[in-house]
Length: 134
Image (cartoon, rainbow, N blue to C red; front, side):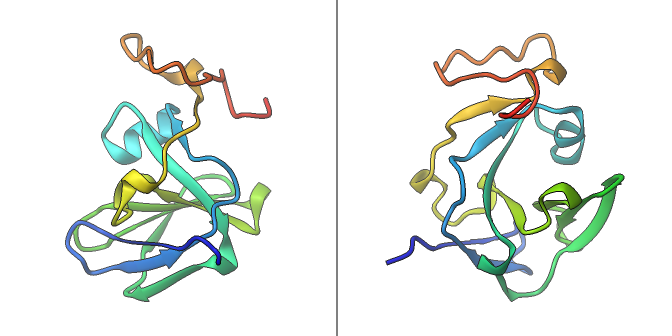
């Protein structure tokens, strides 16, 4: 059986189901994720676009940079998704919006070159200056 996950925004206007995960989840420390979330890092899991279904409502999408769209709830502002033209068949979903975020654990940290000076993870997970493949 394929692993499935459910989630929602803060106010519950948007609900979704997704899975299976394509890669281990990650914690992103890039400037764009920091500003979009208001936090020092943002947790993501990645699924195939065809494996993400919005069961209630739909996110508003914002072009945060060329070729990249961030989806969020238009009512409460919860960040929900990230899509990139470079990975057209994949979509990232925020870990914090999963109904059971404890079911998935981040496997690494990415974009540490953008991390604020006091953001130095001590969890033993691999840290990458940029993305995993960079």
